[in-house]
Amino acid sequence: MKRQFRLKRRAAFQYVFRKGEKTSAPDLLLLAARSREGLKIGLSVSKKVGNAVTRNRVKRLLREAIRPLEGGISGNFMYVIVARPSLAGKDFEEVCRQVRLVFERAGRAVC
Image (cartoon, rainbow, N blue to C red; front, side, top):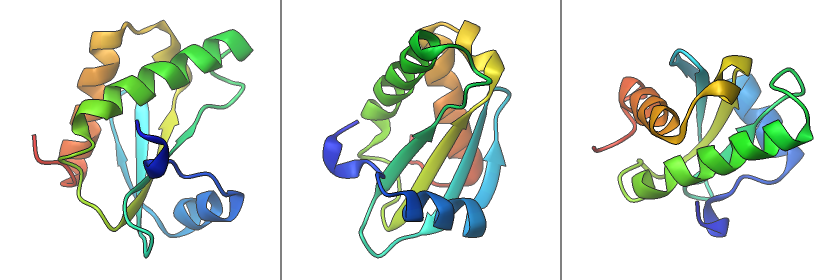
């Protein structure tokens, strides 16, 4: 995922959690809310997922799974992807499949 597409500010995360539409996959939750800034994507991986090493691995997998979809994701939205604890045990192909699935279910991706 390119840095220009990252959601960084705490207030933006809170806005998406409060106003966002929810869509789920077995190990992910996608929240989407309108944005004035264009496409922004944030990742939320809590301590329930595992220790710091595990959480960072999950974030790296999610960023790489989003990379090929960036061109097809509808802009003018802020997205937050919430990882569930069961995602920690998945391999890269499964993470990619679930990220694609959650964006398709939300109707936000052209795949």
